[in-house]
Image (cartoon, rainbow, N blue to C red; front, side, top):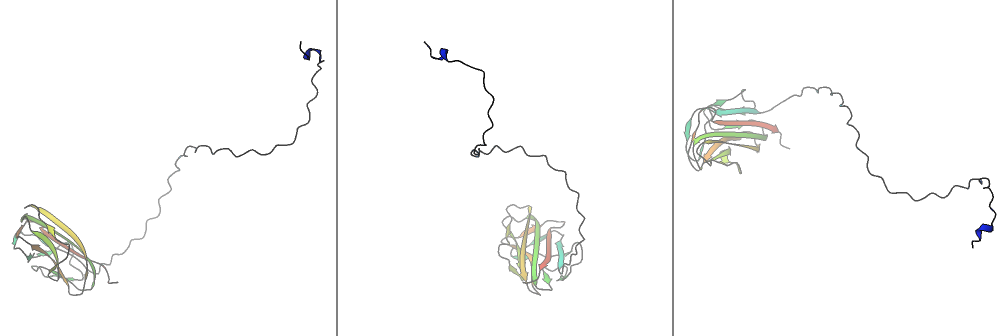
Amino acid sequence: MSLLRNIPCGCPGPVGSMGSQGLMGAVGPTGSTGAAGAVGPMGSMGAVGAIGTADLAAYGCFISHSPRFVPADSAIILDSTLRAPPRGLGFVPGSSSVSVNEPGIYRIDYRVNITAGIGAAVVLLADGTVVEDSALFMLSDIGQRSGVAELALCAGSTVGIGICGFPVLLSGGSSVFLEVTKISQFV
């Protein structure tokens, strides 16, 4: 027998007043990162800068354009200038070197096209001496070898291109190219 049967039940009473707010709970874990927004529109193009000045104190480009035999351990003869007359450099067509008129740091670009001369080395010469690490070895009879060096040169110093080890035959056209550019003063 159940005891609840004998308890009278009435209608529910009115709702009581709201209690005070409880304490704040612990912070939950961070949610995942949302999707990236769309890329904004491209900005307008900036104004064109002023034209700079190029004041090359010394510059010249020299070539040898006729085929010729060059004996081993010899300097290559340069026939003429290319582009503009040299500036700040001394050169006599038919000579094997170019002289600098002002001391400074110079960038030297050199290139030789050979039609015969396997095993020979193309070298950069400064004052008639091979520049260290300038040797470009000919691994086949036909081909072009080129190099670049930056040298500190005094006024009156000379630069040229030489052949070491074995004789070579230069190709026709612009077979030898020597470009001398002063890039800075001594610091």
